[in-house]
Length: 544
Image (tube, rainbow, N blue to C red; front, side):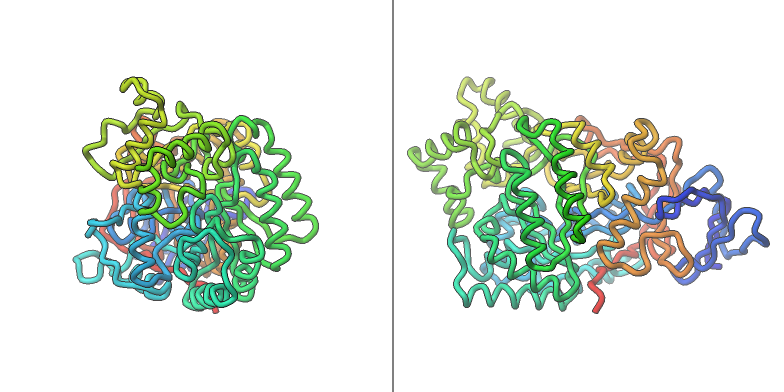
């Protein structure tokens, strides 16, 4: 063997009981699993003593926002140190392929708060236009730069973003697509699936994706279904209309014959306190009728997005420049305030905004860092002005690049949903900002340490299955997600007694503890708790 992991407690990803074994790796795959007492122990060119450690498949982050971070940061310890060996990017309907020059300019500006990459950011060379070209770029991200491998820190799969596709074919207009525009969108989705996308995402509280009606989305989902992909919507409400929004997605994908994966499946805001059982009953009825549904969540109560995303959809029509013009106009800005504070804007999930729940987590302009770590209400009180005055000024001065934490979740809902039979883990980790959400650095050890070991919401074996084999099955990956002979040696060695998230809301970039080793294709990307120079990650493309 190239490598033998000796005397590990194997938690194989099936959810079944763990067992003690030696695991041998050759040519990047698991070549032998010799259980304790079964016979001669495998020999290897290198042997690592894994006594006292659990050995599991690598964790799969089903909802990641590392689209540019993977190209910008070869270490990418935010995910590698958590034991993440595969991320699913292209989320929430907005990413960087497929595009033309005009669309790329607009999408870079629109999601600068998520990923950076806005105007003037030269850290990434946007030298691709198609999904295939973007995935090729991942495969050769750091070629010739002195690292052990040409690729990226961890593997990545891609969802074709429906909002970007609509931006490409229709623009920023709030109207139905014409027949020709719909045909073009369907062709863009088909081309993207053929080039390796594993499915399609939407952000139905984000413009311009939210302007699509159900008929349009159904037609695009039919294309995805032809390629055995899945639809991953950030649906139309996580607040006042949450249950109806979930039901809309279940019905839509049922009509299209498309698999459904519900992104960050939470029930937030005061109107949904204690309502997780209603959601789970809806899903159980659909599953029992034969629907193909899964979901992901992060193990925290606050959400994270951009401040501009809170605005009503009508205020966002036409794109970022039009938004800024409306904010500058006093009469229009007052209309926006009324929708936010009184009516309940669709961007804020139909719930009147509570400024004391909106914490600024990052700004694009360093001159505005005084706002970071404070709620809009706190900054407004310090300035002696109404919260909307503060928020409006910040949006304009920061070029719409402000990110926020939104403290609107419920712990009871989080715990109930994570126990569901189709649950998987997703960080929804936004890596931008001076004070990002700790989920970006802590989701997976937080599941293992807090919710499995400390609270017992899941057994350790169940928890590992939620983070490994279940997402691998959703992604239709035939050789990942389990500790099994012949499978890729994407593996994590962690201490079940000490594993924990180091990240907190006060220190969100702190790395986890209790995860000494992480391997991708049998190569150590984390060794003895330190990042190596190995770049073993590649794009993981939809199988033909």
